[in-house]
Length: 365
Ligand SMILES: NC(=O)c1ccc[n+]([C@@H]2O[C@H](COP(=O)([O-])OP(=O)(O)OC[C@H]3O[C@@H](n4cnc5c(N)ncnc54)[C@H](OP(=O)(O)O)[C@@H]3O)[C@@H](O)[C@H]2O)c1
Image (cartoon, rainbow, N blue to C red; front, side, top):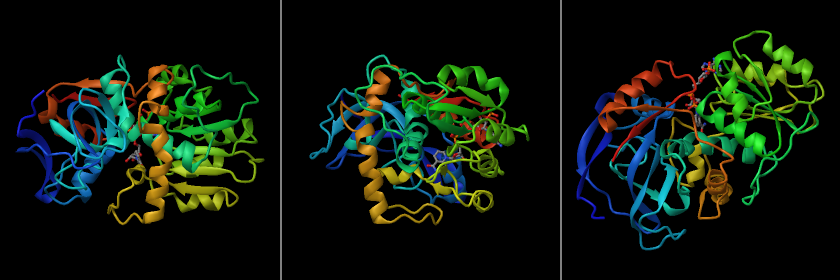
């Protein structure tokens, strides 16, 4: 397939605005592949980064699914032209060379999940930020039992299985966390609005509560005295305090809560025996970046990239296998019309806080 010299691409503009421009198609460097972007999904970080933090002139957009159309000279993973991949990039920040709300986008060969034939393209795109945040928080930061890359069926789970609380389970991250926790053999306790319970049960949640009900933390605390592992997929407006109150009276030594925004100090006061960790998925790219003063050391970047590699890189990756065996599906998709020109409106919708267990998805090329 011939690659054009120019493409449409969403870029950050002055005054924290975004706009679609015609720009040169970038060329892949040593470990990069150029992808013809077929589908993208939206994340809160897209509007937050572009409209609150980023400088002008950068490519916008993180999640993507598409077809490899050219490859760099020194790939860490031997991707081939014609293969379909899903990945995320640090949209709005890195440079004009990255950002997925573009007809063509670059990513590193060892950052791209090879998507099995038949897997839904929009769901594949949603693995980017949402899926890999769930992977990083559960299997690295909370260090729950790992998943083998050869797993082919769900393990049995009983009342005696280890317990995991996924708070705000209908978020993009939460939908993945429920499924990954279930595949890893956990009894998954989840919170969400009641209208979303049936779907979350179909993903593997064993016991559901409404996060809006003030009685929820006490109910979970009573029922699960040994609960000591939790992922807070919302991490604001008091959610981490509610998570702290939900943990069991007899939570074991080494109990942990992982947050995906800076952890609320009030939660630590409620459970001083528990470790509260904050995690940022961008660190798994292994590249240095500046993100609202978030401190990240070179050692942490190297460790987080090393952690994610077996999950994403190559034909034997854990994510590829979970897709191929249909053990983990992507987010519940809301297909949007209008392609790249309509994404800005989707960002408005996401920013208005109206998204409820729906991943806005767009066709690009
Ligand atoms: N640190 C990282 O690496 C990282 C990565 C990804 C996301 N994030 C951040 O994590 C947050 C979630 O992102 P996302 O894409 O997963 O979210 P999302 O899919 O946009 O979240 C929508 C969901 O939020 C739930 N919700 C709304 N208000 C809530 C509340 N007060 N308590 C609990 N849940 C509530 C809603 O649940 P119901 O419809 O059931 O009411 C809705 O389904 C964002 O702030 C995002 O910027 C951080």
